[in-house]
Amino acid sequence: MLVNHLSLTDFRNYPVAEVTLSAGPNLFVGSNGQGKTNLVEALGYLSTLGSHRVSNDQALIRSGQQAAIIRARLEHAGREVLVELQINRSEANRAQVNRTVTKVREIPRYFSSVLFAPEDLALVRGDPSGRRRFIDQLLIARSPRLAGVATDYDRVLRQRNTLLKSARTSGVKANQLSTLEIWDDRLVVLGSELIAERDALVSQLRPYIESAYLAVAGSDHSPRISSTLSILSSSSGDDELDDQPGVSAERLGSPFRRADVETQFRAALAGLRRQELDRGITLCGPHRDDLLFELNGLPAKGYASHGESWSFALALKLASADLLRTDSPSGDPVVILDDVFAELDKARRARLAAAVSDYEQVLITAAVFGDVPVELTARTVHISGGTIVEEPADG
Image (cartoon, rainbow, N blue to C red; front, side, top):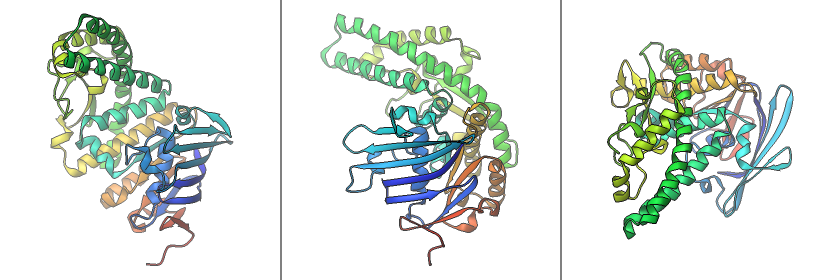
């Protein structure tokens, strides 16, 4: 998979931007705030339909404008595809593939990327929502149909929560309980599929994380990833902080049998019924699960040093790219390293450069040219004040 050309209109700080890219490494260099990250953010959006920096699409549209447009000319096996996505301020987003209108959710089928940025340190040190987003994005990248399952689950969850809030406010009525049982069935069916698919992916990801961690850290700290499930926990945790441990998924055995997951999910809902009615919220399910990262048998969160946390976060993204390239019909994902090298020591920089050297295309951003290993600088684009320039800007 290659991006041959990227075109932006009213995206972030760019009225217009046209960038030609090549196979291998492509380096965007510019002082902070000039717009280099905006270029790779646009490509990351095409593969995930979300930004790694903000949760609201409105921030992606240039101030004073009603829409932003991302166009990318992609190539795989000698075949070119033009993908276009219009992000609208006041109406639904729109998409085209080869000038033919298509559904926005279909766009990630045409483009696969793995992006690593300083924000990804939160995968190790942050709250569970970021880890759920990480595993679900990888899940959908490998099996796009699961985007529909996740969307349906979120819809059912919202409807169920609305009913729980109504029951709490007005007092529980018999018809509300019968309706709740209907939503329970849908929640269990959809949620169990997500739980089982996530666990299967975690199992597949483990060996890739082990090798990726060794590659970037230069030492073996026995990195491990596993699932923790809220449907196995006797305590619902705190729905505000969303940071309470679940129970290891290994209690259900591996790999999961969907029937066992559904049985446990129904039992958990029954056991939490009174708490849910009291609090007006669904207290178990994939929306409250987590991933546990361990180094040398201890949780990385709270025990890993800064350097070890960086190495684990990098390993997660490199492992994702390695896994995607093994079964993707469109070849390697594009690897994007956004302002990463400034955070690494010289040894880790060299090891990271070696780890990504054989990918079809790698996009790198940096504020300082010298932070990037020389083998990744053959194709360099300089950015100054939202303008792409041929030569480095003065000063």
